[in-house]
Length: 488
Ligand code: AMP
Image (cartoon, rainbow, N blue to C red; front, side, top):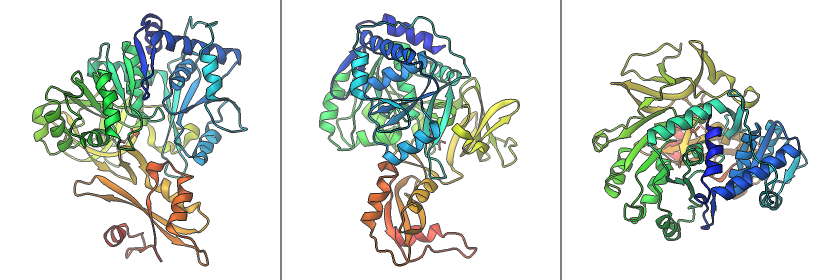
């Protein structure tokens, strides 16, 4: 199991860099091992069980706490500190944690502040981690993702799911001892790949900080010194970095591989990357959080950039992908249907059985109906679109009905309809929330946007438009087409 490998890495990699943060601070494997042992000792001394929330924003303590939980056989739930309070409360109420690491104020359970965590981590080590006895089907972590009812839903990922995923990621990237760039917050499934790949290979996990301020020069100065060899990115993030000409092989001469996941990779992005990094290995991978990071992959060649639709590749060995119709019958090559994933990567379902319908049994194995439409040709899979209201915007997974439900929680809002604006390639370029205001209520766009931002993460907040009535189609459904054409 990978946690035996990880323990060995922590014990043997010594002074090698394990974790480098945004501010340039680096922690060695010796230090990380000490931090993990101390948190592990704390968990045992408090007889902690059940679920533990680890709250913060990519601090080294998050990595130490998440690992310590796993060594102690406790399920961890990473929550980024950019998550609004209301949403954090939802997560706490659903997950019922026995402990929270990080600066959250709650009366629900005991919390350990970041200052206290740092004190615990830096004590002399009293408890070493000697034996690990994890059951493959136990839950390693839960990641909360956008849910269609207006509350986030927790995906339960087992130790064996993770084991299978990381062995495969190591194989497809051919990783040895690397410097691995991290883009995503630890509360996103994308980060699972770089978080664990670094640990099983004794590599340096190099954290890229917040780039929302577009201060590329300071980020690039740090990247230049990183000696990065592998990156795990969403296509949107690579596009953002490529807005600056200096993002090229001159800046990162050792970068040999980018592993993409999370959204459609365009031909344009790949072409541009090959121009900037002529010798780069570009891997496109596909999969939802519900199937542990990714389940298909393909190594793109310079010929792939001639294809209009870039393939998402073929499945990992212990997973089967079935392109199926509505009766779950497999469709022949070339026909578009829903992607069903069966086998080792399929998670244990949602916490409290939220949306249970998507997790099913197929041919005696666990399977997950993704809601993604795709087709297969000459053994390779090609992603087409979603069959529902889930979108990807700037790499983030969002249910439009999650936004709608939260708009409707605002007192002055009578009706809400959320629409994604798309460009000619079908990519989402903006989100608009149309609201009808209750009679006799006086409010404005700014007030609604402000209240919504206390309920939803910023990346989910739409531009709000107040309208008199939500238009309807002839058969009484909300006329999304009309809204897009007339108001966006
Ligand atoms: P998440 O759970 O955040 O990883 O989002 C999973 C969803 O992202 C999938 O169900 C797809 O809709 C989309 N997705 C992930 N990878 C790809 C890809 N390589 N190409 C197209 N869509 C993708």
